[in-house]
Image 1 (spheres, rainbow, N blue to C red):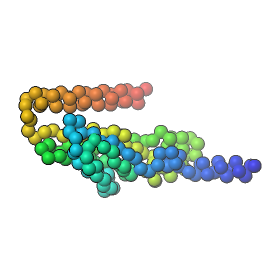
Image 2 (tube, one colour):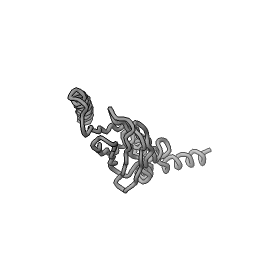
Image 3 (cartoon, helix red, strand yellow):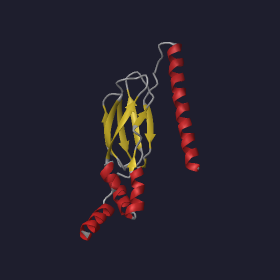
Image 4 (cartoon, one colour):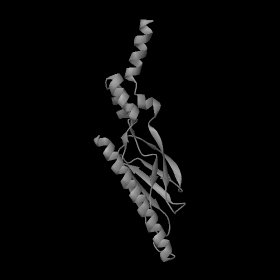
Length: 162
């Protein structure tokens, strides 16, 4: 019985928890407000490449290769460009506490220790407006989005300081 317990404990300590629970790939949902059918090209810092053929939609990417650049295009619109960073997966912290860091090293090497945001919003601005009301509506929606994102960042920074 002792042998089973020791073996189980060793396997748990040597396996990456996030590798098991979240995997090394992730689905990212990309939305282009007020625009459907845009094509998006994603590139990570290690030159991994993925394409989403029509927005809104999801694309499966590899995790762990740093910032992801996203360029969305559609005829009649300026390119929408954004970059997203990865954050640490919560389960990875358990590896440090339980496994003494070995699991963390496994997760970090496999990419499972990181994750991208689940939803990305990319704004494509029309090259021409059909009316001044359309332009005002687009600008107001974009400003509302930007304000909400700034508020999320402010709250997150506030939480991190406490």
